[in-house]
Length: 65
Image (cartoon, rainbow, N blue to C red; front, side, top):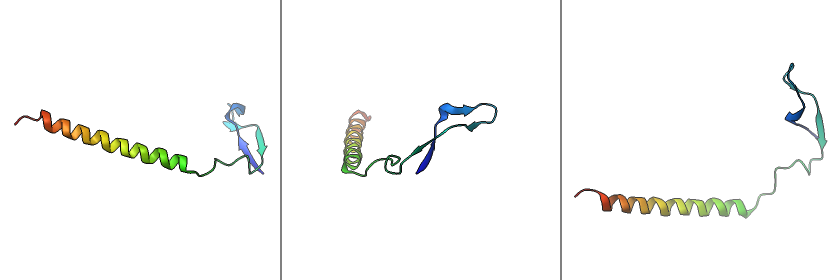
C-alpha cells in the first residue's frame, strides 16, 4: 500500500499536507509500457525531419545568388 498526498488538503500555516489517501500498488502505477508512446515519438521525429528538409530547400531557393 502506498500513501498518496493530495494538494487539496494543505494547511497554509504549516505548508504540509494534512490528509493522505491509501491506494493499492496496482492502482498507483503510472501506466503500462506500450508501443503507442514509441509510435508517437517515432512519427513525430519523422515529421520534424520532413519539415526541417522543407525549410532547408526553401532557404536555398530564396537565397540570393
